[in-house]
Image 1: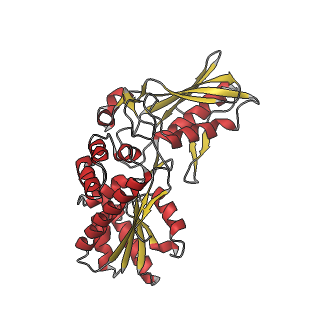
Image 2: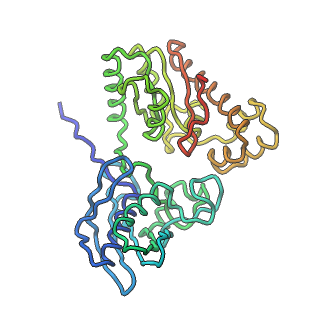
Image 3: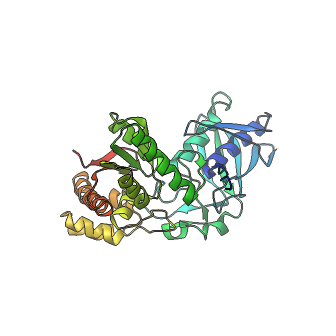
Length: 356
């Protein structure tokens, strides 16, 4: 039997941008740029050797080749560059250059008119510079992506109203290899451990951000009871039944939950799409006003739709969405498993807890 090789983890565009920014500033200041080290949001340290570093009279420039590991990422091998200039004052200004998209519609993590550099990568870039900036000085950082405009046509950016290039993304700093078989095996192994420890209630999270919040909310559940299922909702739920799990708590963001409520077996963007018409229908059933329902149906994203509603209507919509997701779990398990849902806001705050 051939031994399955461990898949190699890579780095996000956000990590590469932070490394390039730090390398550019070090180059400008006359520092060593042979290997650049930055702290990642997940707690790991990234050490990356830039492809090239150079300087002009007033700027440092650093180029980093994105290594996505064994993930089938269209940006793998792409050159991400940063140009850094010193500014008077302590402000760090981050801009998008050639190949970085510009947001034109509301509802995304970045407001219209801004470069599509998401909040976590912006924080990473600032953190990468702050400890080496000369006292009392700030910096202007311009992030560019080679062939970014061309690559963007193969992403969801045009549909989302992000024009002119790709987005600089990442919440953990790492790209986890997307292997269907390997990930399903990891879910099975995690359920094996949970049952071996006598756990009958488990928390399924679709990502690390939702898992971190869930761990605080359900602190009474032991660590092995928290299982990352990524996009494999249907598979995970059926395996939970096979492992004799009695209760599933599902923790995720509204977009993923809408896909689950819509009946998607896999919630990856390549396998299922967001159905805002269905969200509007659910809103109508939740007695949301006709004006808001119409606004939801015209929204650009689920995030945008939620931003259009007051808190009381969001709670009603989340209640109805949770009921549909719980009904889906009951259907997948033939009623053998009870279920709860924890919905998180895009700020990692709790939007709705079906238990309360």
